[in-house]
Length: 433
Ligand code: S3P
Image (cartoon, rainbow, N blue to C red; front, side, top):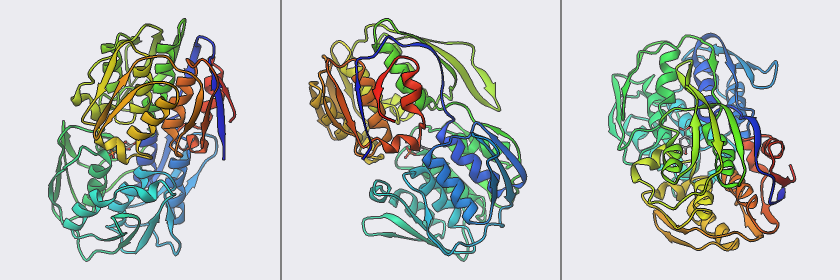
């Protein structure tokens, strides 16, 4: 099992380029595969999750070339051009692939079986199965509504008007993809607006979608036309070096051309409330997605009550926020974040246990935690195969008084290949790949 040993590093300096956005890369492959014509995807994330999505479409007869790293050339087969595969479709660790593809495959004329790794096989799928069945989909899950998912052809799919019970871009996107094939209108409303990449990208591929803050609406029966996509750098991956530069005294770091979609950057609002010194240069649009250079300098952070309405906009950033909170003065309170318990691991428990192992008091609640700022000693961390838990503790270790061993780090490559080498280049002490 792969592991890292990490401890106090140097103040962070330099300019760091971050790999492509995972959410955007998944969607770019999916829509390019269903489009008519050839699409180029620039800045594609060479991560385990997004490669799994590309491999699934290759298995279904789509030609996808990778002439150089982070570029994919996709020859779309059109909305009805996918071909059945006799073998299972392996989503690996990727919840996004499993949930979005359940919607897409519900509309195909052939059956498919979606499987995943140990972590994905524990994740809840009822949230997509239930509304898809309301549309007429034929989907069977394993006991407890977890993967594998067996998706059979539906006689017809009909549009529904659906209010999401939890804010989830994955569920919204699954329904939109099914809605491309459905009779009538599929309308989705959200309890809080979530990332709108599917909506923006459907528009970029020429689908006449209507959407706004917290709602989206599609009608079946149109076409997707090939286009070129420029994937921005993933804010969620940038968040690790961002927090590290906030908490390692003397740091002065630039994160280059980071995706700044407001539905992803709640962490910036929260860090500003905690007293962080982060400046974004004038954001530039990149194919409709804003990007900016982030200039970060170390400061003393203070504990806050994280506003509940920031939670969906920073849902993937809580592991690293817990580290910022552990190193802040006072107590940081997180509430309204029960979704963290059903991510790649139970992130509230994994972070609480890991921080306790390093000497920090954390009081857990069902939907959050109180994190008492303090100082970190060495220890052993179980990442539970969760990429963001491993990376968060690599940041923590840079302020620990002795070595931190972080176990089970292989899945870091699902979202941030090269994390160890690139953070070492700005000053991290991190031993291992
Ligand atoms: C994602 C949506 C979020 C996020 C995940 C990626 C997406 O999940 O946590 O990492 O690409 O749509 P939920 O939709 O379950 O909140």
